[in-house]
Length: 359
Image 1 (cartoon, rainbow, N blue to C red):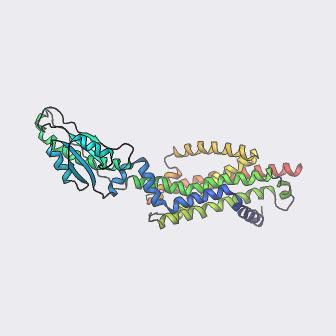
Image 2: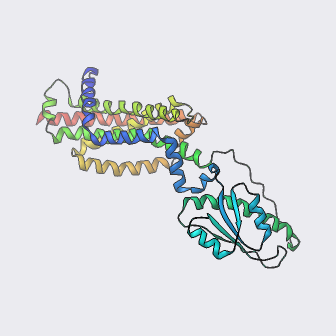
Image 3: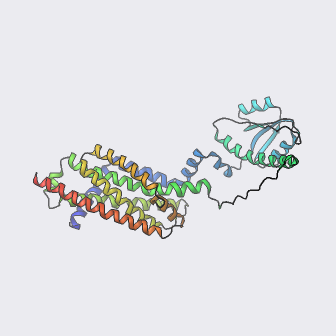
């Protein structure tokens, strides 16, 4: 196998990549995600947890407090998040429907020391992002009100409750999980998935366009043709993944061990690319090869994610600087898999090449 022949094939494939619209669109999509990661981080997080935006809201919301409970009115007026209006229930609900108010609270005229519970009714707009924020801010007020009620009614307790000491978290929350647990692994591994699908197209197109015989008639062997395409796809991974990491850091996201992250991604991506090459060599038809490979890829990913030290988990730990010596064990195991797949790819390519020469 000659390095010059591999470089010729790789250069040829790089020039042809600009004609692959699907690949270019996928790259542009990743570029959009990386460029606007801060904006997307806020937007996507608010989709599955709208209350996460409450800490960033400094707006004073108009709410109505109805009923005759002056204590609740005092709690609401002491909150810096609300502009409180005392009014009757029907007027408050009518103003809520016209969106003049963000919420209406009805508190019955029940004494704090009464035997029956105090049932508070909250009226908000349905399917509204602002309502989710108001709910979270009102929750803090309600908890203070509940705590004082418990102190007033503490003489009813026949047994002393056991206090629970909940350790304080170090911060981060949903944004931290989204960025380091999802966004970074998604961006840096997406080029590997794209490259593995691309190598299938590059190999099967030689069969579909009937250019394989012409290529084999040159001094380049069939196995060199396969490895040249694998090399072209593999070179795309560090270029893309490195660009995404750089753009994320430009967006103000701190990433530790960027070099080690790229190393793990490059090595892991070669496994997917070799699996794609073997699939393409076996089926030789793009649709069948892509379908089989995509199905097998889902199974492989699910199996890998079940492992405690899987690559996605390792990337997250590398990004936050908490990865231990196990990263080198994962790298060694990945290298061993690459050696096996590389040997199988070489032998399979040689056998296919001999059959074409014989034909």
